[in-house]
Amino acid sequence: MALKTLAIIDYGMGNLHSVSKALAKLNAENDGQYTIVVTSDPAVISSAAKVVLPGVGAFGDCMANLNSYGLVATIKEVAGRGTPFLGICLGLQLLFDGSEEDTGVPGLGILPGMVQKIIAPALKIPHMGWNSLAFKTPSPLFAGLPANPYVYFVHSYHAVPEKQDVVTAVAEYGSAITAAVGCGNVQAVQFHPEKSSATGLAILANFLKCV
Image (cartoon, rainbow, N blue to C red; front, side, top):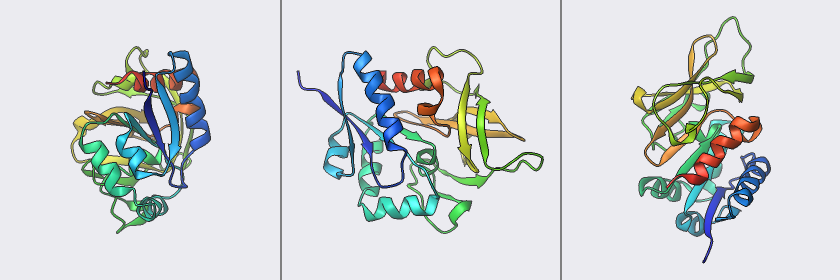
């Protein structure tokens, strides 16, 4: 039986090694259903059974790279036709219309809303380190997890969706900040599951199981 492809999008701005290593380990433990590839090839991404969009850096730089790699239309097409899609860290923020980090730079516009600076006057920005999640709406990524699991964050901005029902988890940092979003096949997390120990691996394993 031919293996299905899980494509991790390479556009020069992602934590590719850690993400691909974690997914490869989980895939091997689950009968190796997927061929995991790190790729910037639109044809490979378009034909993949599952797609992961990581992201590290500034919003504007990431969007500039996605455009220069010719990947914006491919990502929108893949997300729009129902392919299981996972955004990680800045990969969550890119799904929205834009960001205060780089005003005037359009995001992917897959989910309506904007990315805003975290307001936490008594706390350090960036929000860095372990924090617990409060689940808000059901997500396939969180199946089987205990209440309020801890995960690892590094970010100064968070998404503020137009429709709050896409927020699947929040974390408390001065106020409730968006930690995860989901709408059908498109799911995304602001934290780093690949750095979040057993909880993060369980989240990635749940993504491997998504149909």
